[in-house]
Amino acid sequence: MNSRKIEENIVKGMMIASTLVILSSLVLILATVVVKGLPAMSLAMVTQVPKGGYYLGEGGGILNAIVGSLYIGAGSVLLAILFSLPVVLYLNIYAKKTSRLAAFTRFSFDVLWGVPSIVYGAFGFAIMLFFGLRASLLGGILAITFLIMPIMSRTMDEVVKTVPAELLEVSYSLGATRLEAGMKVVIRQTLPGLLTAVLIAFGRGIGDAASVMFTAGFTDYIPTSLLHPAATLPLAIFFQLGTPIPEVQARAYASAFILTVMILIISIATRMLTRRFTRHIS
Image 1: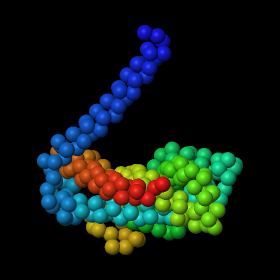
Image 2: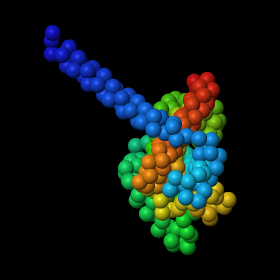
Image 3: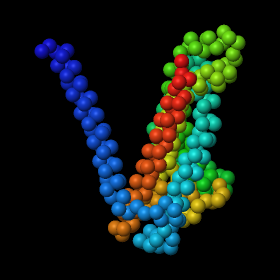
Image 4: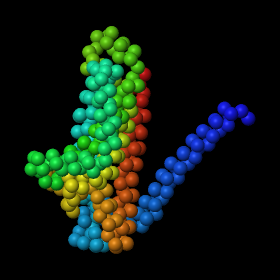
């Protein structure tokens, strides 16, 4: 057996081992959440807000955290799209792909992607103090928007860069402006990838605890205003695991199971939408 064949077998073995490690980690995480969380699951957990002494083993549920997470996740994703999509279209349609501005912008997104979420929480908290805001749903949305915007922008940028230059040139030759080419050609061509970018950002945002700890606060009630505090599932899990009561700790795994199911539902919905829009891709 020659050296090239040996090298190929070694690399192949490393790839198989890496795949097995990733799949095993996923299975272990899901098994832990399901085995420890399902016994503590009940209808009250998803239909009721916490009652007095809930975190000490009393009755109630985490409906406030479920709704709060959805509010913050949806609000931050909408804001991030409003800021990210124009930047991505500008970088790939208006600005030269090799320009210093484009390179610096992409480098900035890469740096911001690696910033710890607690830093975004501190930044959001500083902004709230400047404007005289208290911990609220609005503060949580802003902090998560800062967190997921680099992720969404960079992922969308990589997706849009796959659009063939010839497709844009054909659009221009037919009389389309750059804006029309971006909105009617590029977005339609890359819609499945853009949906994936939104899903990645949403999953990152809805599962983060550090950035909302000081910005969204925590409450046992469902927020009815942007200026009211909002509970989130990650913080609910954190508080439940921090108690010495086994029953409450079991509820933490049940909360983690609910969060996992929410992400799974969103993933399946995104896959269905992706398949639906893939037929529009040339």
